[in-house]
Image (cartoon, rainbow, N blue to C red):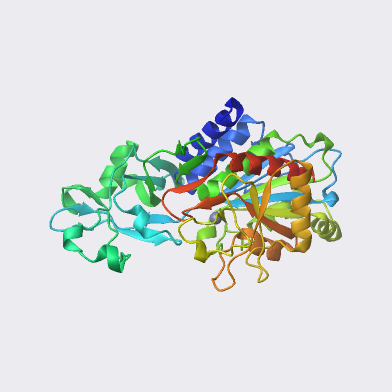
Length: 426
Ligand code: ZN
């Protein structure tokens, strides 16, 4: 690996390791943007006195954009969209679970995690804690290293597991052990309060989740793969936001904008999800002095790229893939097509994406799902529907999608970043 790529991948690993929840991802994105001269605009006040480099945060979602005095909004936007959430296990509001032998945590699944990947893994806890304030405040929380584990049943007590497959009940089999003590002698609230150095009476609620405490790593005979939790979709978030923060708008003909949404893994229907009005409201506020006709013209001239993970062809399961559309790690970004609009790319979008790749010397591959398997989706179709903006679906290929630990190619993340930069000036 050359030193420039190594530096890039190290920065990405730092972001992945530190972004253990959507709230941490947003905070890390915020720090990166502030370091590049961006300012946060307030939700509860008008944006008349904003600068040219701005961002707006609501919970686990963010919109960031760059304006220029000689760049009219009517020229349209180049919108890069991705999601900050990943499938995982989330803590329920009351933590009273106790067996005869252990204090345990009550959890529920978020999205569609590969449940087996969470077993026998050293797990940390992270997210946000809501505390007393005026009327309340949120505090980021991340446990210092691993704190709990979901132990798999020994094979001696489940002799057929390798032949019949592992069946896990989400209510009864996934509760992590976190202490030898029964629940009432080490109340979870007390533990969290102790970690935050506050009184437990100040804790009102939380949005907490489990994460793999093992840091990301590089592997392969030639250091060709990145292994980490949350590759889907923090690799895309990082590529999009670094492309924006480095982008020189002085020669641009359109407004570059990045929107990172929470709640994609659970359908995007929320006040901060891609199916809601979060992004359109922000764009309306950006264009508050413009006529509705100007807004319509801007949307007509805009393009959106939904950046999300793509399935590489699995070497052990070739029968699960359309082998006319083979996708390999480190062979370039993936342009995703699906006639049923599970991906938003149409023929024009594919041509547009290929042009960017050819002009910027970015290798690319085309993905189509097997026709007899149901296809995944992204924020692409829902963003296209809510804005009425032509949209493409692209991303880096990966294996083990929705595992607690996924794998992608170190070169593909670089190609994705180059694509994001080129997209802004396309
Ligand atoms: Zn995704």
